[in-house]
Image (cartoon, helix red, strand yellow):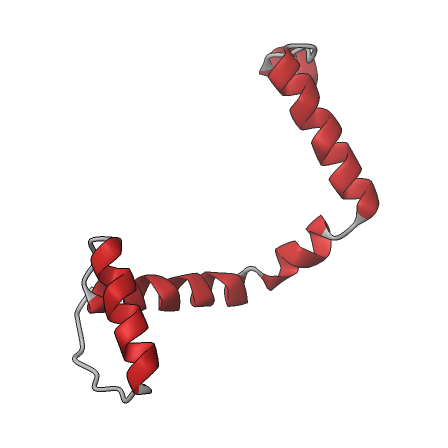
Length: 86
């Protein structure tokens, strides 16, 4: 993906915070802003997932399935057992 140079203006205290944070994370300011923008984009594109995950019934079912998987109490089936010889 091509890169584009962008000039932005930030409040001085915000700029100092971001510079310090990026140094502590061993990131350039460009990498830091790219990661933030990419996370923002992904969150915007996946808004529908929030609706699904906010359903109490779905969340409960998901947690039960994860617990069974982690504990080894789930029985796995191969494709033929589930769908037969389609």
